[in-house]
Length: 355
Image (cartoon, rainbow, N blue to C red):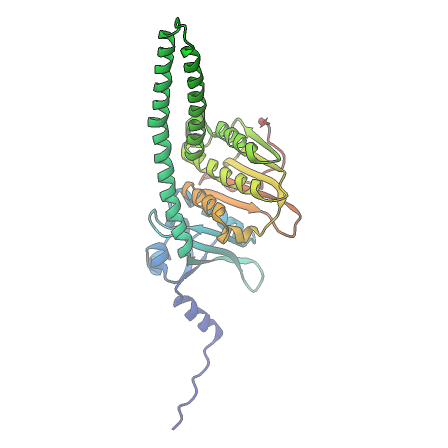
């Protein structure tokens, strides 16, 4: 006897089955950030079962530094935007690629924020490599400062004492010693420059404004174009934030300098109501900003890594069919502040240009 054909399941039931049994994770959020429903492998993403999450606020599941960033993203989704981001929900949790988009009711209003998270093994591997690289950079910088730099300084001092002892000699020894000292001083300058370039903590030691000036100087050495720095004297980021902003500026400006057709790079440090903001602008050819944020080159992975680690919202404005020009924007938000409107195109009051 032939079995009767299975009755087709309703489309809504099929969709829910697909979401619940997916290897990724999907969830719906209310405007306040509370979970409405969670589907898929929630434990893998959040470290908690779906039933536990439905009594929590989404921002409480994220790492503390990133909470204000997720609040800003959620508000943008309820304003109708679709966003791509990366994030982790635990200090040692893996990184996930997360799409956020408005879910509209039949009447057309945004009823929920929909979120889809998928693991990106390649990106996670690169992020681990970046963490190891940053540790190695810091160690090398410390080695250059504590041993190489101090040893060169000690050698220069000994030569100076020797030159004074031989000052009355009829032989041209003091002159030759002076020449050797000049070579040592030039070598010490090179070591200092390499040390500053290797160690992003230069922004913590000398301040972000001064570090951006140093970065602009390095760029001008190899870039056949104009590099300008505009710094608002009231922008005073915390040390950890300053390090992250410096590294974002380093990668964004370096990427701009390498693109054919780019002749102007501007680095702007601003002070907004919600905190410091950094912009890197260039006039080079545009590119797909969403694609770059989701899985672009190494420069974008580095920028995302430092932004996520310091709780900075990273935005990129560029498009291949919108003429030339790119803006990389890093926003530092306070959890108690609502997101600012788009930063103005002109420099804010109190901004000082650095040629």
